[in-house]
Image (tube, rainbow, N blue to C red; front, side):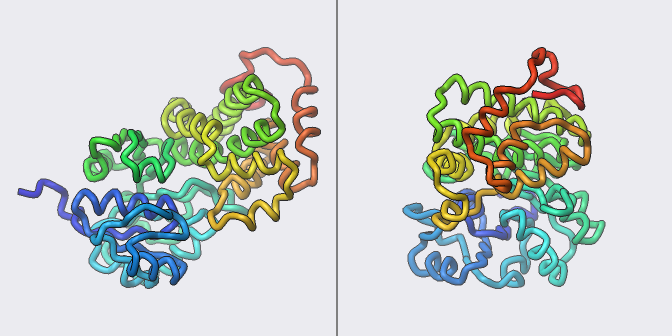
Length: 350
């Protein structure tokens, strides 16, 4: 007898990048039927004809239980829950289109790691703005240290699923759990999303450190002080700082700052080697969320009077024409501090 929740037989995955396709594949392998929406018609065609997302996840076979489509209406029709994995800048436009197709409320899992430029909102806040209030209790966030290709290859991975309805969160947790993917639950939506977003900024900084050949000492310092910035901004936003010591904060930070599979690390590394940002972004079909999130992080820091010198330094390189070596020099030349300034004091500095 099937013990899964009644909504757990068919799901929609909105967004067929590497992570969205990976989650669709993972759920399909548990026996579910998955409708996978892709923005690009060529991605739909590649999956239909070759059972492979050759643009975003090449070399990974996709089960026949994944049904690709370029129609949002077809993707969400008669599905029990949604996983949304579009880039952060596409979240509001896609949700606005979905708002015209809504069935009765279903659980929504946000798998996007980023924040909205301009509004400075988390993805859960964008969702609650666009969709009717009846959908809000079913919002959860899936995040944590995870490279898509490693999940596809069955490498052990742990993630955080954060939601405000404990019963629903536990039910969704059970759907994702397999021998190689372990899910922990939490209730801190803000902390879960902040960690998943800011780690991308720090990954760019870590790539810069390695691109400039500054050494392992410098990278270790970057990770530590990057965590301090995450904690300070999290405290100012009302997050539970314990969340940021966990999978979505420290865990994801370590992964993306030390793993060359990270798109954001790669952007930073190439910047450190002297390539211009425009050329780097043109070379990759995938989105490096950290570029957009850097602007959001600096805007939030200014608004809340939280000092975030690493984020400011990355912003200077990305948007103000500052040379990477000068940004490092400026960081190292800052006034001496005590390490107890590291963590939660809103106005402390790195």
